[in-house]
Length: 243
Image (cartoon, rainbow, N blue to C red; front, side):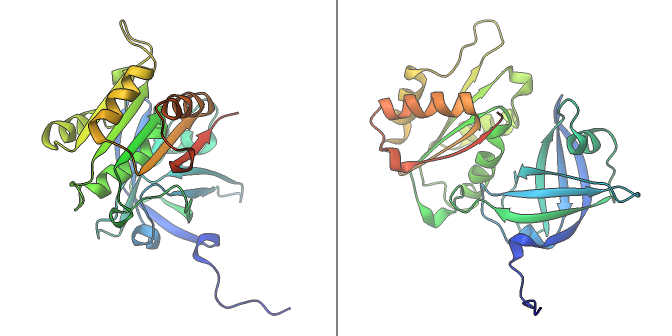
């Protein structure tokens, strides 16, 4: 049997070295990795991460990329510690700078964005589903701030909202970006609703691109609210996690 000498990049595992670790929220950790894939992805895409134990046992999981390409040769993941999560548990409690893992990707061509794709951008994230949208906003900030963008973000509490300080600074400094944060488990908090969606749309006008990422429940609710505002179904791109 003759095998091709050229293997698609997405199917090949690439060695990656952890270069930095830092807390993002009480349950989410930023992991910066040096890898050859660092200059070969679009904002919004994700990678498979594989760990291999000394006895050969392997575990893997998919994570969205949080960073925009910056020429550093590294990319950033934001990994939430999950109950009984083999991969997330290792990253949350055992991983150290200098450790090596494997990455495969990038994955998710339709759920990705770059500046030349245009906008306006309507983004909606639930919990850790904000991570690929954060990558899009970071990419936009590198040279496309003239493109109107609004982020609808649902989190349980402000303390659990990923990169909320960064997003608030961007909203204060950039008149073409607005943040619409809904906290569901704080006094006076609420879930996303029609007025919140209407406000986000009023800030950007008719969207050219819509990206939604989160649990099935969040994506379904956000999609229904956006469609009710007259946005064409064909504009909406979604990624979901959970049963």
